[in-house]
Amino acid sequence: MTAQPDPKTRMAPRPRRIDDPPAATVMRWLARGWLDFRSHPAQAISYGTMLALLGWGGIALLWHWGLSWMILPALAGAMLVGPAATVGIYRISRLAMGREGRLASPGQVALAGAILMVLMLTWLRAATLIFAVFFGLVPFSGFTETLLSLLQSPQGIATVVTGTLIGGLFAAFTFAISAFSIPMLVDHELDCFSAMALSFSATIHNFKLAVTWGATVSGAILIGVCTGFVGLIFLFPLLGFATWHAYCDLFHGETQHDDHAS
Image 1: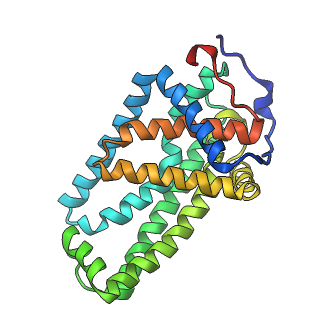
Image 2 (image 1 turned 90 degrees about the vertical axis):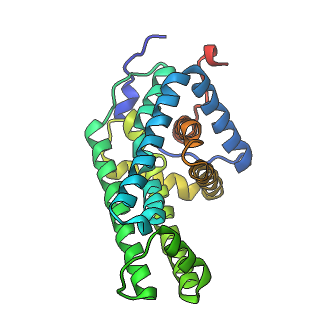
């Protein structure tokens, strides 16, 4: 199929409400994502491998710099910028649907990535301050010692609870503004802030569905991390493909796929 310019890329999409059961809708998105994965396995695994290598490299650097206590906050922060890392995945799915290969709003995609990076850095600063509030201004210990302190002391439990609540707010807000705005900017000539507002609107108007999708993504990423990032080699591109189809479903009512991928 030859990719053709789509005049609709100049029109801002509007989110629709999906009344199907959330679990069934999420499974439909994952099924469409799996079809894209099967159609482009080499590209998909390459993206997943790249992410795993970045994860291994990041942890190695933190350990080498004596910042192993930052591993857990850094992993949580990396999830905030995850949507920006899937641009290439969205492009593959977009091409599979017969659309243009170029990014519709490359500069705005970069701006969205920068905003997510700022949110990640803000979270890392907040995590450091939370730790300091409960443990004081003392030298941070290594990863194992920090983990034991968090799980075996009253102030550690308080740190975990507070960090989870504040981190959850960061994650919820970031998910709402970025879950569908990044694929939208790949697909439409639109400014970053309008795309984020539309993504937020889609999340609010499909709240149960958004919670189900967010929990699915978080659970899959947790599995990937717990397998030493090996699972992410497969789960990361699958989630990226599925997110593209989630965007198409929410903003265009599209869940079609090329016949050759069936």
